[in-house]
Each structure stands twice: as C-alpha cells, then as structure tokens.
Length: 556
Image (cartoon, rainbow, N blue to C red; front, side, top):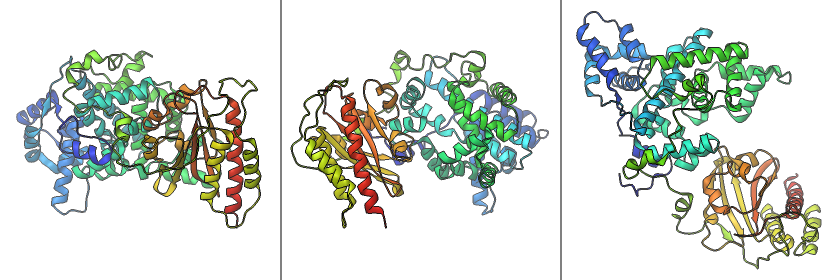
C-alpha cells in the first residue's frame, strides 16, 4: 500500500484489511501436524478440537473453512463450536488447511509481533471466561459462544500486524489519556473497530454468532447498561417490567460474548478501574455470586487462559496485572525508539487537520455581520466585564419569552446566534445541528470564522461516546477553561479538539419537544484571553430564553 493513501472510515479499512493474512503461531501448527502424522488412525475429533482450541488464529481459519463447506453444501446449518468445525473438516481437510497457513515465530525484539500475540492472548482470555460463565449456568450454547468470544477480537489481531502505528496511537489514547475506547477508535480510524470487524467477518464467512456480536445494533444501549448495573446493585427502583427486560437481554447468546470481550480488554488497563468494577458487578449478577467470589473466579480464569495460550514474552497484560498492579509489558509500547524501524513500512495515522482539509467547499453558512470583541475577557471575574449591547440582549430575552405565532425554529436559532455575537460580545459562534435519526452532528451556520476554517465542514457520528453524545442526552452547558480543560478535552473527538487551539470556549445543547436539535459553540477567537464566568452566565441565560421560545413553537 502507498503510505500516503488515505485510510479513514469503515470502507477504507475493510478494503485494506480484507485480504491481509493472519499467520498462526509456528509451534501450534507444528504440534498439530505432528499429532496428525503420528496418530492419524487413533486421534479423535475431541482430541483434535482441544488442540485446535489452544490457538485462536487456527480456530479462526478452521471455523472459516468449515462455515464455507456448510455454505457450499447448501445446508441450512452453521458452525456451532470448535468441535463442530473440526468434525466438519475431518482429517482430509484439516491437514491441507494446516499446510496452507502462514506461520509466525516470535522475534522478541519486534514490538509488533509481541503486540500481535498479546492481542490474541486477550481473545483467549475472553473465551475462557465465557466458557466458565456459561458452564456455571448450564447454557446450551456454551461451545458456540466460546468460539464467537475467541474470534470477536480478530480485528485487533489484524491491526496490530498490518497497522501497528494506528494501534500504538489508540493505546496511547485509551491508556495514557484515558479516553473512552469508542471515541479513541473514532479519532484514530474514523470508525469503530467493531464496525470494521463485522464487515470483514461477513466477507470471510465467519460463524453467524461472531457477525451478530460485532453488530452495533445488538449492543446494549447506555440505558440498558445502567439497568444491568442497577440490577447487579439490587436497586429497589427496578420494577418487574424492567427486571423482565433485563432477563430477556442477558439470556441471549450475544450478551456474554460481548461482555467477556469488554472485560478482557478493560482489565488489560487494570483490574481495579471503575469501568472494570462495573463490569465485574454485572458478571457477579450473571453468575449469581458475591463480588469477592466473582473476582476470584475471574482471576482464576485469566490465569488459566494464560496457561492455555502462552507465547514467551507476550503474557496478556490482564494476567500480568494479577501479579503486579503496575503494568509491565506495555511500558515500552510508547517508546518511539522501539518503533523507528517500522515508521516507513506501515500506514501512519493522520492528524485531524489533514482529515478535515479534504472537503473542497464549506458546507455551513457563514452569517454576515461584524463580529465585535468585548471590552474585557479576564480569566477571573473582576466586575469590569460588560455586555457589548445589553439592550439587544434584554430585547431578545423578552421576545423569546413571549409567544409569537408563525415563528420557525430556524428563525429563533438565527436570532440566538445574533444575540450571542452582537449582544453578549462573543466573537465566534457555530451552530451544530443534530440529526438524531441519522446519528449525525454537523455545522450549519457560523459567525466570526474565516471562510476556509475547518469548523465549517465539521461532521460527527453521535453513536460514538463523546461529550457531544452526552450533550444530546439532556440539556447542559459546558465551559472549557483552564480549570476544566484537562477533564473536558479528553471527552471531545480529536477532529473537534484540533479546532479549539487550546483556548476557552462554551458549549450548550438546545432541545425542542424533548429532543436535541442543536449544539451551540462559542469562543473569543484564537489566542484570546481567558473567558470569565460573566460570559458563561449570560451565554447560558440567553440560550435558556431561546429554549423557552422553541417550547412555544413545539406546543400544540
């Protein structure tokens, strides 16, 4: 691939990865070939399946070919486990498959190979966890879920091997900067790894449960996750109907497959994090065990997974963290000296500025009119801050509060932007309209920005967790300043953070009839002085008045 080729979004990544190889561990292939060669007439399917199950990459290739055979035979069946896949292939098909596999022997000085094998170990960890959970519940779909859990994370394997610089950046964001994983994936890849994985799983013909588990549409909503945690905490506010809804959800084979992979990826960053604790609470409820007993069981499963799939020097971070609270294996991951030899061999992540600069023309409307700089913008309220045009602000507030027949929401929002700029004196305003049905947020109008400013072309997927998604859940006003910058900026996507230039700004969500219709952004321009609470208070007050006007428009 040309390193300058743009890799951004699900389509681009699927094209790039779909034909890339996934080599199996050399020793695993040799061990299977040796057993098949020495004991061809004695080895049972169950014995072979146990050996195949010790290497997730071989499991993927076996399951893929077995599923293809079912399809060729026009059978209305699917691969339901590792035993079933091996039985479908038989010795006649398994030998040629092993001969055709690319193999890889670990070079301990190669950080890419180390992370490749480590990501495979994480998948083994997920499969061992789910197998134990479902055995405890005597679930009939144990083997199918075990295989799906093992293959769920194959996108991570592919990316560590074929786009390691992107994965390294993703690790930096999730581990060092503690950014939500879905938001970090959107920043680095322009999509989630789950969306890439689902598309490739379909192309490769992986088992049906893998495809379904990777579908965002089957993931629990934030409300469902909250209910799951409430049930785990035995919250008395949960009524019978909600308990029934939760029980129906957790009985699906998809749920434990997702849950064990969320857990295996989360605890690689620490068993004692708040996110890990919430997941462990949900597992406790699933297993009907006390929290301490659940944690001990999870630790034991983690150690067992490390025993089953052990490549020297690549112990899963989750297993390392059982022995030491400080992560050992990943400490050199961000050391650029380890990666110097690979910088010219692999695609490099793009910065948000270059991503935004590809659009040929602005899609937002630039609202004409002078943009006035307020008289004072000190960081601490001094009593000297003044409105640019207090009469205009009061006139607009009064107008917003009085019903006006025939008024349109667009007219109210335009008046709001005018008041923020000319009345309060905020220099730059951007109106970002929400399209909830399409899960999109995009800039539609601006005041005070240059004609080529990238904010005019800004678009964002609201299905990805971020500050924008939170603002669309309920009305809120956010001030990003020296006190809140470190906490707030990590919840914004990189493509928007690149627009802020490190200066103070204000964000507020505007609702109409109980639904978000816009997010308003305001600042005092680049390299402006710190913004005092004076402007935050008046920004919030004027926006609240506009919301009252929108309520009167929405009323029957």
